[in-house]
Length: 454
Image (cartoon, rainbow, N blue to C red):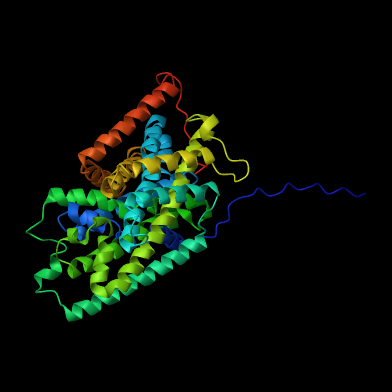
């Protein structure tokens, strides 16, 4: 007697764990880009009285503590991978909603500051010199929108090649600076320490203001936490990779701006624009060829970042619309042919076009950091509550990293300009009012979006 074989159910489709520690670190470094402090160099120097190295290192301390909290929360919620879901699940849905609302600044402000930077840099390259920078604002805003409407996305291989090309340019800059120092050595021992501390210009208030801007150097490290389901030994490697990416980024960024400050001790205002001051310093040590190559490299990197963040903003709005956190009929729709959230891409493109005429790079960076630092504070608070307040282990190592991470981020957030805080608080107020409208005065539960559309 034979029995028929019972059909076996197909194995569920799951993400493959293929990323080791090295791959996670490379992913984070590619995402942040090795040239991260260069577009910021001039505006941070102006805000911090020249102490760019110090501000980079202060920002690194804050991000290292925050990186530990991100890594530990990724162990608790391995599929969440974002500040608003950590806060919403660990603390309260209303706080998670406001965290997500504030972090929308990250997604929308990034393409705005990329458009501003690209427009200024294109003018300095002398492309169509008869055209003002406002013309290039329109060009880049339309370019970002058009590329995303067609569903064009940068591949990981393209991003890796771009990071490799930028690394070559950085090596060229260091080599040119070393040759320059052999011919024009800094005057005396004090010159070598002045980038860290210059008694003639040092002020805690100015350094704090500059550090609140310099945090932008590290934006993107938190995306490593979204790879928990694809990482080998995620409980160990996500935490280590996040911390290592912040550390490597901070050391490389500090080295880049340290060399730049040694090479140029005068005012950066003489270059005509603070946004591309680093490239002018590079031209000072390496000639016009290095200036142009570095400017073009940064231009390509900012276009890639702007297009990617523009698409990210559209996807975030789509995720919120699909979950009915915002009107689904407009925000939760995909184009039938390209499968991109076309309504959201067009809306973000319009916001970018208008805002780029109203916001300079300095203010745009501060607005981006306004939302990011709120998210970072939320993640640190989640780690503190989960592991120390609610956990059984009450030892100091469960308390100190998240508490210090929260306090340093709060300090940096409080040192953003009054204009950035005013605009940021206005945005938060709109979020509170919108949430009240959607929930009948918060009598119904808040809709928490999953973020799967991002």
